[in-house]
Image (cartoon, rainbow, N blue to C red; front, side, top):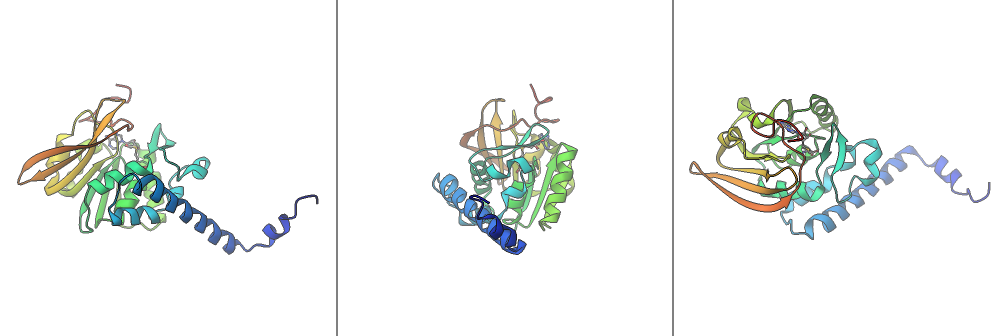
Length: 239
Ligand code: SAH
């Protein structure tokens, strides 16, 4: 048997023990992610940090990326798209200033990870994805994991979602050449819209606020997202 002494123990371990130790291992990876990538870089909102600690990011990435699910980077999710870097998810979520009662719109469902985080911090989450295959996969994944207050729609999110508007908070998780007017229109009074705006290779993350009908905007961060493609954004992905 040589140095293969661990094999019998592994074979006799109960599946439940394996599952428990895997869950503990992922929780440990999430703790490290929240501490080192997020809190230490200045995201302080306790509810945001708590949500990031519980959402199982490894269940939102393709099987061949699970080992790197909690690493400090975006990861491919198919269709040329990515699940955003954990830190960017944290920054965008914090900038939405959610207290728990809000109706939120996300444009760019992707894997559904950001929507899952939002679902723990708001009342209802509407999310729109332009790739039908990603929308379908995210809808199934979110339902299976029990995120019952997330509603996944397939379509062009630059049009917003008029049937569910107005929204107290809107987040766009793809890079826009400008803020799509329907999103500003569908923002409730006092609402926050967080969106990366700029060129294809670099954008600024903006927090747009509607106060007494007036729009104010402040830049939070430089960033780089995959392009927002639609009626009020880029007309094709390589523009
Ligand atoms: N929030 C995602 C990351 C998404 S990446 C997550 O947590 O995994 C950006 C996503 O925006 C991609 O899936 C892309 O297909 C989608 N997208 C691009 N243009 C869009 C549009 N006009 N409407 C809706 N989704 C769009």
